Figure 1 (cartoon, rainbow, N blue to C red):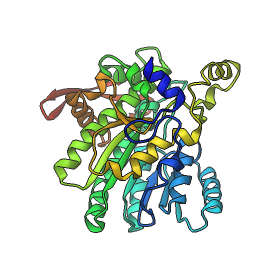
Figure 2 (figure 1 turned 120 degrees about the vertical axis):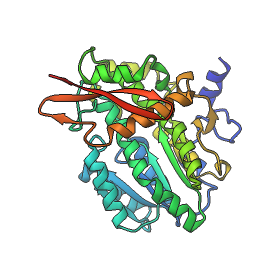
Figure 3 (figure 1 turned 30 degrees about the horizontal axis):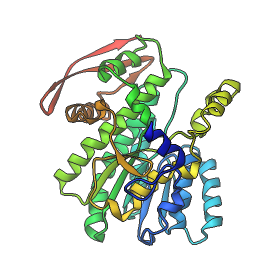
Length: 354
């Protein structure tokens, strides 16, 4: 009850910020960001657009991945109008496609730019069951697996930049408190969901993808430390906010639900605050593998702090992004049944379903 009251009134936590803090407020005292290059996924609207606007205002060079080039160019124009000196680069990217992720990284690396910030913000709530060209369930592929591959392919670049510039690199994964709604064996669930052996539950599929974001952050922080990289990885819950994530369900019921929950809703500038705080604030120098909400460190669900599950997810993800283990041939999905033995996974077999 006390936590709810603190949330509603915007009471500041140990960081000095709270639920009512905005992205501009939490970055007001941050160092000038003119030396910083940031990649922000999902920046065409909502939280991502506000994150891009504020970081550009603070001087950062932005690289914006774009599934829709027109929408991203329009955002670039709006941000440039407010911050005329900002440098913004738009590159095509569809996170649901592993080949598109690889193409984006190749294009970015060809620019020979440094990389200090990677903000994995893009999210999708698929109301209908769909399978990607790589044979992966759409929500899991877009919200988690595409970001996993993007991060994996950019880790060395970020470590190299941190070494050359002496500036700590930061990776921010945008999750949701909804990650705690998923329970059960996620490998089995994803397998059954992909093969259409169970009814599609959009909320549970979304919750799984958000749980994967948190587990990814935990294992990523461990691997960055093992690399000796001056790069941190943290995860954030932005809060409850009405964004384009709900665009497939606009209407009376959605409007009513948001009206009833309006006291709990954040504005978009407030929802972008935790991301911007974790990405830029000097208080978080050296802080890694943590979960933040309302600009303060907090605890994720019990399922999200299991280091063995985090390692298991990483190893399974390595298989899924490695051709030809994840395949889509004709209308069939190849599903890899995985076994874990400490740090190794072996393929127990490929099942084909019609």
